[in-house]
Each structure stands twice: as structure tokens, then as C-alpha cells.
Image 1 (cartoon, rainbow, N blue to C red):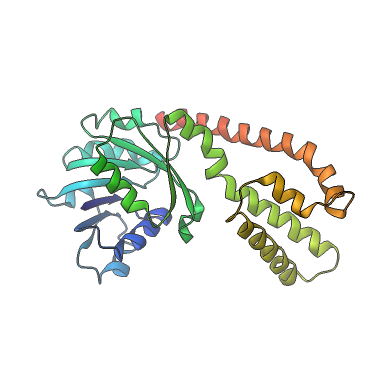
Image 2: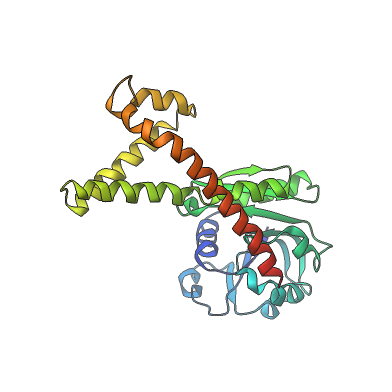
Length: 266
């Protein structure tokens, strides 16, 4: 399998790092104008960095082309990509619908994948959608190159991918915000900052570990909140307002996603 990786920022670097030690690829060409990470992968003979798509050899056929550049660069990159032989395009660009890419690449199946920040630890939720019907071999290739990044879920519509982005894409930030709030409250009662952060970190990690064996949130809550107990008293304050606040927050994220679609087209 030949891979063309366009962009090698945070996510691109993580993907390349995962792929570099795998055995499913023949050649990987990485497009990075700054050539910033070229030296880090110089020991891999089959990974080649070039500053521009024009530097990709004419005989190279990209079985999979992966977009991980800034959405604003799309109008510049698409015309250049037309000169390269390609079979599949995977876009990780947020707020860029498939139709905006298909305008220039109508002859190529395009797949959108939306990961989250946990791709750094191989625990990402990767939402995937393809407007075109994929051959089993093509689908297998896609799943292969993302298998060590986390859980990949194929969706039936691109609309659903957008609707889920404020949950799976933004979701880690909600947890981090909760951790920050709990840390601040712990500091308020007189605990040193480093200890407070450690206590909250271990509490959240411990709670998350319980989800590996159960996704029944009601049961998990009940296992902590006994009748007329301390946790129940806290939850009575949290539940009504938190439900409403989260609904409003997710809607705000969804509205911003729609705005970004229009901004990226202008």
C-alpha cells in the first residue's frame, strides 16, 4: 500500500509515527513545506518527505491519500493533487464536507474521518463516512491504517458525522474542564496545587477504568450515589442544570461547525 500524507502537523505526525513501525505500507510520501519532521523519520527508507506535491515522482500511485492540513489550504492543494495518480482520499479536515472536495476530485472515492485528541494514545473515537460505496478491500485498507489509533465507527450519513462531532470530537475537552474545575475546588480547601491535580487525575482515571466493563451510566452512578448520601446530595444540584447546560453547549458547537463550513468556502 502506498500512502500520500498531505500535512504533518500534530495529527499528521501521530499518524505517521503509528504507520512508521507497521508492515502494511510500501511507500509513504509526506508533503510538508517546512520539512520539519523529515529528520525524525530519516531512518525509514520507505518514508520520504517532500515540500510540495509537485515533488512527488510521476510514477507514484497513491493507494490512500490522507488530508491533514489546514482547511484554508484546500483551494491551493486540490488543483495540484489532480496531477497525482490516486485511488482513495481520506479527509480529516474539520468542517469540510465531501462535496467541497469532490468538486475537483470527482473521479476519486472520498472518505471523511473525524478523530479526537485521544489519537495520541491510541484511544481515539474515529467517525467515518464515505459518500461512495466502497469495495471491501478499500474499506479494509482504511481500517488497517487507523486500527492502532482507536475505535473506528462507520456512519450512514455525513450529517450524522457533523452532529456527533461536538460529542466525540469535543468530548475530551468537557472532561478536561471538569478536571480543571475539580482541581480548583480542591485547591480552595487548602490542598497544594500539585497534589490537588494528582488527586483529581487519579479519580478521573479510576472512574474511566470502570467504563471498560460497563456502559450503563445509571448503574455506575447508583454504585457511587447511595440513597440520602453525600454523592446524591451533590447530584441533586448538578443534574438539572448540567443537562441543560450540556445541551446548550453541544448546540453551540454544532452552530459553530456550520459557520465554519461557510467560512471555509469564502
